[in-house]
Length: 136
Length: 109
Image (tube, rainbow over all chains, first blue to last red; front, side, top):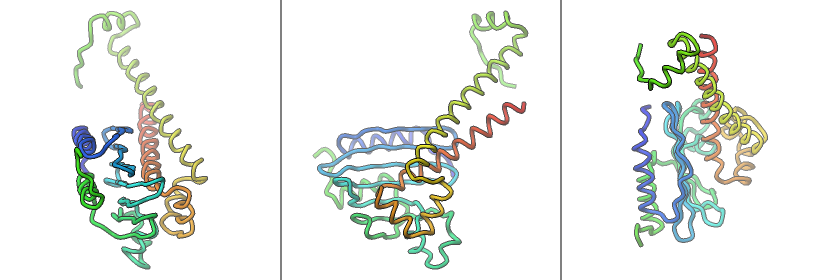
């Protein structure tokens, strides 16, 4: 998988800054083969946490909405037991190396398979579902 | 072989210690070893902190999160955002191995 450029992460950070409040840039650890990008922000009572990692596995991501320490909604593609079981049923053990995009519901009680998500799509989701509007 | 521009003052100083090409190659070797070691130390520190936090190594953690529902439930109760850690844990393991390999290559030259 082609590595993104520093410009890609600068653009992501700017996009988050335009959308969320109290944005704190946690880090950009960048080398030719691997990258970690992590930014936190907030909107009203919600804490928003975004992390992307590029390495030999591809693009791993974790975008979460938190309220008082509890998950309101979260998107990631880590291939955990529930995501694997939901996607592949009993044959899940033959797919352990795959990334599985999915969505967690409130308190992580529910799990739903999704298409792969980007930061842009996540922010669009927030605007739609949590009535987040930039500049308001 | 690439040519690199070096300020005269460094060239003059390097010549005091012997053949210019050998001195610069030796200096680059030492610098590269030091940089590799710094990156390995950083990765090891990160990996160690995750090991201590989850009381296991990544290989066990990753496999258990994929195959053991009770382990997943237990970890999720402790830290609902464990995916952030898991992704990063894997990242630092890879980082550690890559720099160990690079250091090994340098030391064998």
